[in-house]
Image (tube, rainbow, N blue to C red; front, side, top):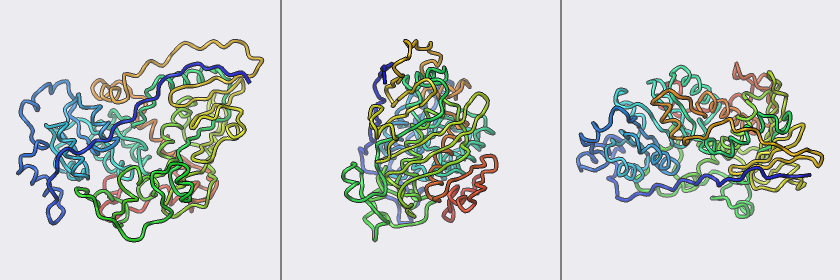
Length: 476
């Protein structure tokens, strides 16, 4: 097999963690969010001071942005919109909240985003950035859409299939600028791969294989150590550990069932392996990797989904598994299978070393050749009889930046590349991989009705049971 490297470019840099610089006031005895707000105002904390000059400055050409979730990835998102006017910051961790307030001294602060929406008049803000834990994404996003505000939300867009559908439809009705935080979508390498696939460089694509080397989740202690998991846990812990100072644990739990705090859940991203809080690697990294074939092949809802892996655990997502999606023909699109692999599971071509053994990658198999890509580079793989290949002209313009693209869309109405109309169906498809895995059934998916005709018992995994006071229907 003859291979030719077409392009190589550096990977996107990872965001740094936002750290606390000062000690925040404690919650009052009742744990009131407004108690915290009031104590900070009384103390004259910089976080809540809103100087008149900042309010008035450049109001005409700056978005007024509320940022919900300010630590970790949220800190990076906050940094990326600091050129706008940050009018509100919110985080369940007081230390993180105070650090955000120091970055945006004109912002008001909340630790409960429900109270932010109660207190902040719709006329006081234009857009919202959501970077909470994924099990509260929909709760933090939907009120903004109902108020017809622009929204940037981290991936995965929601915690489950039903939430994804609700958010997608709400965004369509709102007619606002939306973007899911799949930052790699803005990089040049993905654009060149999409051009090659759409341009027919490898003929008709009938197979796609996406794999990631990350092995986080339910596995043996030995495998957890071998594969570099960030925490080794095989079941819900007995007992609890002290709640870190400043963390509003009950608020962090949100719609999830109440449970004592334990260090195996927090800080992130330990939580993402627990079904109550996250969706494991499938929906997290699937947002990045399956994004590429979704874009290049104009994918939407799969016809069938089947998962393979160890027996499902009631509470923990697996470290290793794989999922096969089957897509039917549509217009010029031929039927194809797309297979996702995580952890120890790998494609046959990788196991047999007929392709380079990249730690993570996406392999498009076409009638005229194959294309292998990761975040920063790609290879065209042709047989020995292929004639010299001429790259098609670039047709997808460079991105001005994933966040900048959204900000520009908010101000001018130009389109984004990962609006909820695109990223909602992508999120649904990823979640369906987990539905198939947890149900142990090959699913036939009726996307229009959101039903599984051949396995209706699996439909319980399309949504979740919400804790009293956090019922999703209350805001839908």
